[in-house]
Length: 339
Image (cartoon, rainbow, N blue to C red; front, side, top):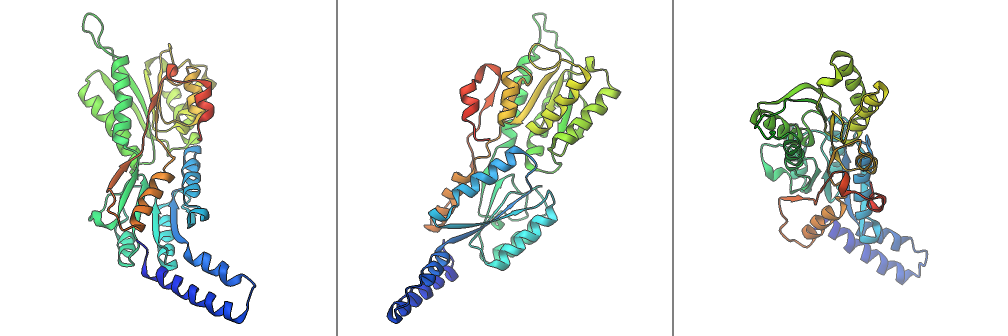
């Protein structure tokens, strides 16, 4: 769907070129103006650049919506604050962009600003994390990960690891759970999968549960404090809701001289699938990495081009994702990764 103002701009640009050709103006400035007006303008709001994963998502979107393909992308970094993202969306509305792509820091609190975008006739596409709104017509489509499924993959791996012995005895499983930003789709999906598994398995116990804000520094602080309060021998699983936090927690374990990972007492679970985490997995320091694919630009481009052609788009599009244990990885595969 191309908005009326864009069509009008193209007509005016054509008239301007015709007039200038008649006047013999060969400066090329009018042609440049026409090219700029012909671009479809996308406003893209990200929560921030707190991790390699987040940077990879930004790069993927920027590569997809290039000027060569007929797009102008306006990128805004929310600095990890919802208020900043809301302000940026209002700026996009004032600028009269053609589409808004929002990667929300948390699920709730978007009704008002999305209503403003809807009233302005600007389609909003949610990517990465989803939103919870009173009326789903406030956004056009969602492209991103199935975070519930991601959590379930990790839980299934743990259930296989800690199954009953030949006599039917179940081992006690004590879990340190380092959560992502509370209220984000990634945190909700990954946390809920673990919490449900603990409800279903009476031998599973979350002994520490704290928010690491998806950052390495905060997760390291949490793990440092945990090791001061709890004997490491009582920890069976370290469940970190992204790679950055897993690396932070691992740094604390390294400093304390505590063994972890394959064939050691502490099983480490991570999410995202960055190169750094996959290297640690291949080295046996992380047991399982559940992929969260940031290369969402092509999926978003497909949605926008369908809308430009007045085609009906799916409300939800999940990106392709895998999971990795040590034996699934090779140096060649890791080197081929873009994030």
